Amino acid sequence: MAKRHPWTEAEIPSQDGKRVLITGANSGIGLATARALAARDAQVILACRSEEKARQAMADIREHYPRARLHFLQLDLANLSSVAHLAELFFEHYDRLDLLVNNAGVMWLPEGRTADGFERQLGTNHLGHFALTGRLLPALLKQPGSRVVTVSSLAHRGGRLNFDDLFFERHAYGKHRAYCQSKLANLVFALELDRRLNQAGSQTLSLAAHPGITDTNLGAPRSGQGREPLAMRLARKVSPMVLQSAAKGALPSLYAATAQAVKGGDYFGPDGPYEAFGYPAPAHRSGRARNPDIGRQLWQASEQLTGVVYPFPSQSAVA
Image 1 (tube, rainbow, N blue to C red):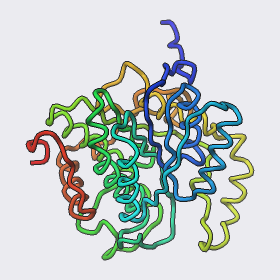
Image 2: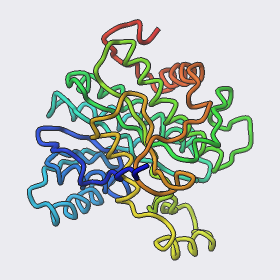
Image 3: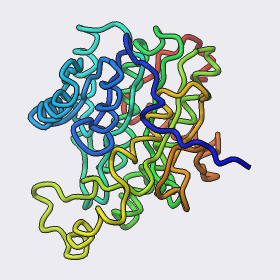
Image 4: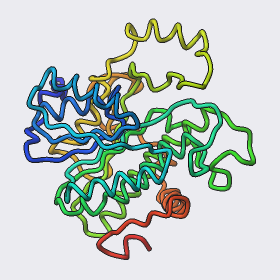
């Protein structure tokens, strides 16, 4: 059997005339995704917490693509007021959106709370994106064939959504368990959103992707979190030799965002051993991720926690 030709950035069709919003686009796979789409003439909105870092990322992209059409909107996914403010600013300047990439994330944080009292990893990685997608949905629904791509992780396989204690208020907190839960929530959300879009008769697609094991700064400590453990510092020194680049890790997201042969509910990751590295291919979804009952439970909990109810065309989609 002939070996399948690997999909690369060179396969991305022209994105001229398309408007894209990417969360966490100032570094890692978010920046790589923004750079690749800008290179294909998309109008790219970088939604980031730090304007300074976003401006640096924009300068980096323009160094290679001087005519890139780039814009910045401030977004702190750990604060629902910031999510609402971004949506307000978006609709002041734009009326439609072709692609939303829910990319930003935090990883292995010590126990803490968001501005709204949520456990930080679930609050940032899932609930912030749930609220953002719901608020931007009218702009996506205006564009037939628009897409929402939500970035999950291999870690989703170890995740469990404990709806009786999502924020570890009654059980001991574990930063790895909390991260796995948040990435499972990302994939469950993407699949449940696809079900509801289908029920509403919408042509907007919801897809998901994961980057495999990629060299990014996601696990790096933030200011005020203390000194990075020795093992992590050593891992960072050798990681460029054993991990794939951010550009390679962004390929599954880019495939989900731009490839023609995709359908709603698809999930992509690297095609190498254990989905750790390689080129885009269909990825494994855990049984919990595929369970529609878990999808409904997460959706209801997310609506209650964020106060965001999706404006689907048909009320049957939110029954």
